[in-house]
Length: 247
Image (cartoon, rainbow, N blue to C red; front, top):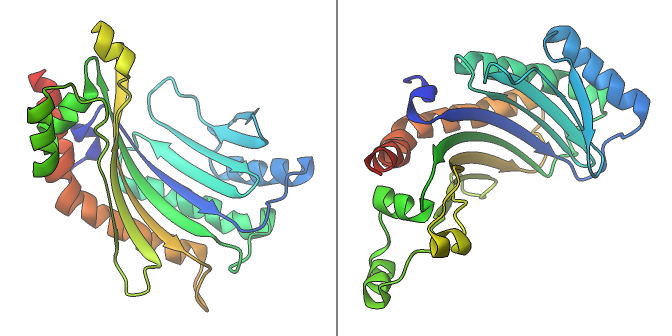
Protein backbone atom coordinates (compact mmCIF):
# COMPACT_ATOMS: atom_id res chain seq x y z
CA UNK A 1 0.00 0.00 0.00
CA UNK A 2 1.19 3.51 -0.75
CA UNK A 3 1.97 5.63 2.29
CA UNK A 4 -1.39 6.93 3.43
CA UNK A 5 0.03 10.28 4.42
CA UNK A 6 0.28 11.19 0.74
CA UNK A 7 -3.53 11.26 0.31
CA UNK A 8 -4.51 13.80 2.97
CA UNK A 9 -3.08 16.43 5.28
CA UNK A 10 -3.37 14.11 8.29
CA UNK A 11 -4.33 10.49 8.67
CA UNK A 12 -4.81 8.25 11.68
CA UNK A 13 -5.91 4.77 12.64
CA UNK A 14 -8.00 4.41 15.79
CA UNK A 15 -9.32 1.41 17.66
CA UNK A 16 -12.39 1.56 19.91
CA UNK A 17 -13.60 -1.23 22.19
CA UNK A 18 -16.98 -0.46 23.77
CA UNK A 19 -18.19 -2.61 26.66
CA UNK A 20 -21.59 -3.52 28.04
CA UNK A 21 -20.47 -3.00 31.64
CA UNK A 22 -18.68 0.03 33.02
CA UNK A 23 -14.90 -0.10 33.16
CA UNK A 24 -13.06 0.49 36.45
CA UNK A 25 -12.84 4.22 37.15
CA UNK A 26 -10.97 4.25 40.44
CA UNK A 27 -7.62 5.97 40.75
CA UNK A 28 -5.57 2.80 41.27
CA UNK A 29 -6.93 0.91 38.24
CA UNK A 30 -6.64 3.86 35.85
CA UNK A 31 -3.11 4.82 36.88
CA UNK A 32 -1.93 1.20 36.86
CA UNK A 33 -3.31 0.71 33.33
CA UNK A 34 -1.59 3.81 31.95
CA UNK A 35 1.67 3.10 33.80
CA UNK A 36 1.83 -0.31 32.09
CA UNK A 37 1.34 1.34 28.70
CA UNK A 38 4.00 3.96 29.41
CA UNK A 39 6.52 1.25 30.26
CA UNK A 40 6.15 -0.07 26.71
CA UNK A 41 5.93 3.38 25.11
CA UNK A 42 7.97 5.79 27.29
CA UNK A 43 7.18 8.82 25.09
CA UNK A 44 3.52 8.53 26.10
CA UNK A 45 3.85 10.66 29.22
CA UNK A 46 1.12 13.32 28.96
CA UNK A 47 -1.74 12.24 31.23
CA UNK A 48 -4.92 14.24 31.77
CA UNK A 49 -8.67 13.94 32.25
CA UNK A 50 -11.53 15.25 30.16
CA UNK A 51 -15.13 15.90 31.07
CA UNK A 52 -17.41 12.97 31.95
CA UNK A 53 -14.65 10.80 33.38
CA UNK A 54 -12.45 10.20 30.35
CA UNK A 55 -8.72 9.75 30.99
CA UNK A 56 -6.08 10.20 28.28
CA UNK A 57 -2.41 9.30 27.89
CA UNK A 58 -0.58 10.61 24.83
CA UNK A 59 2.73 11.68 23.32
CA UNK A 60 3.67 15.28 22.57
CA UNK A 61 1.84 16.54 19.48
CA UNK A 62 4.49 19.02 18.33
CA UNK A 63 5.90 16.79 15.60
CA UNK A 64 2.46 16.11 14.10
CA UNK A 65 2.84 12.35 14.67
CA UNK A 66 1.88 10.88 18.01
CA UNK A 67 0.32 7.96 19.90
CA UNK A 68 -2.61 8.25 22.29
CA UNK A 69 -4.98 6.09 24.31
CA UNK A 70 -7.98 6.79 26.52
CA UNK A 71 -10.42 5.13 28.91
CA UNK A 72 -13.92 6.31 29.78
CA UNK A 73 -16.95 4.68 31.39
CA UNK A 74 -17.61 2.08 28.71
CA UNK A 75 -14.90 2.55 26.09
CA UNK A 76 -11.24 1.80 25.62
CA UNK A 77 -9.63 3.70 22.72
CA UNK A 78 -6.17 3.84 21.20
CA UNK A 79 -4.78 5.40 18.04
CA UNK A 80 -1.86 6.88 16.19
CA UNK A 81 -1.78 10.07 14.13
CA UNK A 82 0.43 10.21 11.02
CA UNK A 83 2.32 6.95 11.67
CA UNK A 84 5.31 6.04 9.53
CA UNK A 85 3.78 2.68 8.68
CA UNK A 86 0.81 0.56 9.69
CA UNK A 87 2.92 -2.05 11.51
CA UNK A 88 3.63 0.37 14.35
CA UNK A 89 -0.10 1.13 14.60
CA UNK A 90 -0.90 -2.57 14.99
CA UNK A 91 1.86 -2.89 17.57
CA UNK A 92 0.36 -0.08 19.66
CA UNK A 93 -3.17 -1.48 19.36
CA UNK A 94 -1.88 -4.92 20.35
CA UNK A 95 0.03 -3.63 23.38
CA UNK A 96 -3.04 -1.87 24.79
CA UNK A 97 -5.35 -4.82 24.12
CA UNK A 98 -2.90 -7.26 25.66
CA UNK A 99 -2.92 -5.29 28.92
CA UNK A 100 -6.65 -4.50 29.04
CA UNK A 101 -7.95 -7.85 30.44
CA UNK A 102 -5.54 -7.61 33.38
CA UNK A 103 -5.49 -3.88 34.12
CA UNK A 104 -9.15 -3.12 33.34
CA UNK A 105 -10.76 -6.55 33.73
CA UNK A 106 -12.24 -6.62 30.22
CA UNK A 107 -13.74 -10.05 29.59
CA UNK A 108 -14.20 -11.79 26.20
CA UNK A 109 -17.94 -11.64 26.96
CA UNK A 110 -18.00 -7.94 27.71
CA UNK A 111 -17.93 -6.40 24.25
CA UNK A 112 -20.63 -4.35 22.59
CA UNK A 113 -18.50 -3.33 19.59
CA UNK A 114 -14.90 -3.52 18.46
CA UNK A 115 -13.92 -1.28 15.57
CA UNK A 116 -10.90 -0.07 13.62
CA UNK A 117 -11.23 3.30 11.90
CA UNK A 118 -9.00 4.75 9.18
CA UNK A 119 -9.41 8.54 9.19
CA UNK A 120 -8.23 11.21 6.75
CA UNK A 121 -8.36 14.98 7.32
CA UNK A 122 -8.06 17.77 4.76
CA UNK A 123 -7.61 21.43 5.68
CA UNK A 124 -9.81 23.56 3.45
CA UNK A 125 -11.18 27.11 3.49
CA UNK A 126 -14.42 27.25 1.50
CA UNK A 127 -17.73 25.44 1.03
CA UNK A 128 -16.80 21.87 1.85
CA UNK A 129 -20.16 20.55 0.70
CA UNK A 130 -19.44 21.76 -2.84
CA UNK A 131 -16.03 20.09 -2.73
CA UNK A 132 -17.56 16.75 -1.72
CA UNK A 133 -20.23 17.04 -4.43
CA UNK A 134 -17.56 17.80 -7.03
CA UNK A 135 -15.32 14.95 -5.84
CA UNK A 136 -17.79 12.08 -5.60
CA UNK A 137 -20.93 13.48 -7.24
CA UNK A 138 -24.56 13.44 -6.17
CA UNK A 139 -27.19 10.75 -6.71
CA UNK A 140 -29.12 11.62 -9.90
CA UNK A 141 -32.32 12.42 -7.97
CA UNK A 142 -30.49 14.87 -5.72
CA UNK A 143 -28.60 16.42 -8.60
CA UNK A 144 -31.93 17.10 -10.27
CA UNK A 145 -33.20 18.79 -7.08
CA UNK A 146 -30.19 21.07 -7.09
CA UNK A 147 -30.83 22.01 -10.72
CA UNK A 148 -34.50 22.77 -10.05
CA UNK A 149 -33.92 24.92 -6.95
CA UNK A 150 -30.61 26.49 -7.97
CA UNK A 151 -29.70 26.58 -4.27
CA UNK A 152 -26.47 26.10 -2.35
CA UNK A 153 -25.72 22.72 -0.81
CA UNK A 154 -25.97 23.03 2.97
CA UNK A 155 -25.27 19.40 3.75
CA UNK A 156 -23.36 16.80 1.77
CA UNK A 157 -22.14 14.07 4.12
CA UNK A 158 -22.58 10.74 2.35
CA UNK A 159 -22.61 7.56 4.44
CA UNK A 160 -22.60 4.02 3.10
CA UNK A 161 -22.73 0.95 5.33
CA UNK A 162 -22.59 -2.73 4.41
CA UNK A 163 -22.38 -6.06 6.21
CA UNK A 164 -19.59 -8.36 5.10
CA UNK A 165 -20.84 -11.54 6.76
CA UNK A 166 -24.14 -13.41 6.74
CA UNK A 167 -25.10 -12.62 10.34
CA UNK A 168 -24.24 -8.91 9.93
CA UNK A 169 -21.87 -8.97 12.90
CA UNK A 170 -19.06 -7.37 10.90
CA UNK A 171 -19.88 -4.15 9.09
CA UNK A 172 -18.02 -1.57 7.03
CA UNK A 173 -18.98 2.10 7.11
CA UNK A 174 -17.61 4.76 4.75
CA UNK A 175 -18.49 8.35 5.58
CA UNK A 176 -17.48 11.94 4.89
CA UNK A 177 -17.89 14.73 7.43
CA UNK A 178 -18.02 18.40 6.43
CA UNK A 179 -17.96 21.38 8.80
CA UNK A 180 -19.35 24.19 6.64
CA UNK A 181 -22.33 26.00 8.18
CA UNK A 182 -25.25 27.90 6.66
CA UNK A 183 -23.92 31.11 8.25
CA UNK A 184 -20.59 30.70 6.46
CA UNK A 185 -22.32 30.19 3.12
CA UNK A 186 -24.59 33.17 3.70
CA UNK A 187 -21.72 35.52 4.63
CA UNK A 188 -19.21 33.94 2.24
CA UNK A 189 -16.71 33.88 5.10
CA UNK A 190 -15.05 30.51 5.50
CA UNK A 191 -12.46 29.73 8.18
CA UNK A 192 -10.01 26.93 7.51
CA UNK A 193 -11.71 23.78 8.74
CA UNK A 194 -11.12 20.05 8.60
CA UNK A 195 -12.92 17.97 5.98
CA UNK A 196 -12.79 14.32 7.03
CA UNK A 197 -13.22 10.93 5.38
CA UNK A 198 -13.55 7.73 7.40
CA UNK A 199 -13.54 4.00 6.76
CA UNK A 200 -14.61 1.98 9.79
CA UNK A 201 -14.72 -1.80 10.17
CA UNK A 202 -16.90 -2.72 13.14
CA UNK A 203 -17.68 -6.01 14.78
CA UNK A 204 -20.53 -6.62 17.24
CA UNK A 205 -20.50 -9.03 20.17
CA UNK A 206 -17.93 -10.86 22.24
CA UNK A 207 -15.01 -13.05 21.26
CA UNK A 208 -15.26 -16.57 19.89
CA UNK A 209 -13.84 -19.53 21.82
CA UNK A 210 -10.04 -19.38 21.79
CA UNK A 211 -9.98 -15.95 20.16
CA UNK A 212 -8.13 -12.99 21.68
CA UNK A 213 -8.72 -9.26 21.36
CA UNK A 214 -5.55 -9.06 19.29
CA UNK A 215 -6.78 -11.80 16.93
CA UNK A 216 -10.11 -10.03 16.42
CA UNK A 217 -8.44 -6.67 15.84
CA UNK A 218 -6.01 -8.06 13.28
CA UNK A 219 -8.93 -9.38 11.24
CA UNK A 220 -10.67 -6.00 11.28
CA UNK A 221 -7.43 -4.20 10.51
CA UNK A 222 -6.76 -6.50 7.55
CA UNK A 223 -10.22 -5.86 6.11
CA UNK A 224 -9.81 -2.11 6.56
CA UNK A 225 -6.35 -2.02 5.03
CA UNK A 226 -7.57 -3.96 2.00
CA UNK A 227 -10.58 -1.67 1.49
CA UNK A 228 -8.53 1.51 1.87
CA UNK A 229 -6.07 0.23 -0.73
CA UNK A 230 -8.58 -1.35 -3.10
CA UNK A 231 -11.43 1.13 -2.85
CA UNK A 232 -11.06 4.25 -0.72
CA UNK A 233 -7.90 5.73 -2.24
CA UNK A 234 -9.10 5.85 -5.84
CA UNK A 235 -12.80 6.47 -5.22
CA UNK A 236 -12.78 8.90 -2.28
CA UNK A 237 -9.37 10.14 -1.15
CA UNK A 238 -7.79 11.00 -4.49
CA UNK A 239 -10.95 12.67 -5.86
CA UNK A 240 -11.12 14.80 -2.69
CA UNK A 241 -7.47 15.77 -3.16
CA UNK A 242 -8.07 16.83 -6.75
CA UNK A 243 -11.27 18.74 -5.96
CA UNK A 244 -9.59 20.66 -3.13
CA UNK A 245 -6.58 21.43 -5.30
CA UNK A 246 -8.88 22.74 -8.05
CA UNK A 247 -10.46 25.23 -5.61
